[in-house]
Length: 491
Length: 95
Image: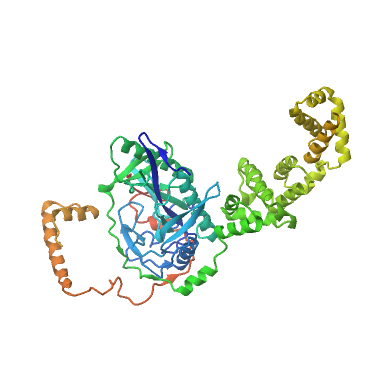
């Protein structure tokens, strides 16, 4: 695969690392009992701890710790028995404490890795440096009033997992696949709801460019991207910007950048000289966090089948390709739907590829077109299984099945009901098909002559005419066979 | 370690405190006194001693994940010098 970008003078390679911020799925915040519910009225879920009233002390949420450990296991990472909460100090209006409680030197989870799968069937490992627990900040609204900023502290203190990758990513696509994979793993584990629109999953992107084989170049960090599309756009723009500077003889300043989602451009937010001095130190309000091997083992045993395990199982059991299996396992609801569909009839496991196609291309495009999610699909997994069964047993043709699926989608009826009601059952009776072909041949003597004179392409014309007469219901294979036989006999 | 003019300016900026020249001079003197006094500890050999971050020997207390659904907005905004429709209103901050 060629990952290089063509420059004016030579090729360039991108070097990308991601910091993913994933909101922990929990009822209450990391150090207080306030609710984490999204979309409530401003400042309605703020305890005295979250507002940093004097004398308030943080008490850690046991469940959030367990969620972080489970996530670590899902990222094939080392769980640290001993970790420490530190204060990261900075001033901002939506940070009442004046510091964020985070983990610096001793994170709860150490080195791990995730595997990303490409369309061509190949895979690549992206190494994880660490995962640590930290508090989210509040939300600031800057654009409501020319001289004021409005602050909502509902998000202040909600638990985040920051997942840091090694700079192993080389293309915008890999970055997209990586964050999709992280999202998928966390959603299978139920440790993060994965909702990027609501900001439950967002990423900072570190990017530099270099001549292939050279040392890493100076990097810039693009802050707070909340969709895969924006991540790819921002990387493309920033890489191009850096290459242009380098090729015209300049050098890259280590900057923190903001991405403007409407212009698609990055702009510097602060440079290295203005970079924050966070003055990390262990939070005196919190003792070190200790987790025993026994607790880790207990959590491990509560972990469900993860996408990679499920993917390998699908490849083995159903002989699916690596890519098909990875598409099916990207989201838990998709793999659940597939398992339910294919289990609805014992015959279907011999037609797994067909089941996959009907889910991931036909059904998905209908869902997309009508703005539905798989979770509220009008076509149930069992009904889709039945449809595929009708195709695989030659009761209906694939072409008619597409119409049937649209009907199922619109009416909620089963495939069998629609096929029976509309009389769509495929004509497989040799005699009946033969009769129709005879008619077609008699009706078109000129065409027959031309065909016999060597115009082979006309076969399609006869097939079309015969199909028209049967309203598309003739079994195409039988039709073709008889037609060829008949026409050659004319010779 | 010695505190000089640059260091004191940096600390003041990080703390969002404005110091005039006289105050800077005084703080340089005071902070250097404090550091000199603390530096006596350097006489002790701590080569093989792990840094102590907490003198308590108890373990970190944890709570269950139960949320209280009380609406906090009135109480939390009670001290706010300026507010609007449930939001804190602060002087504009844009980076």
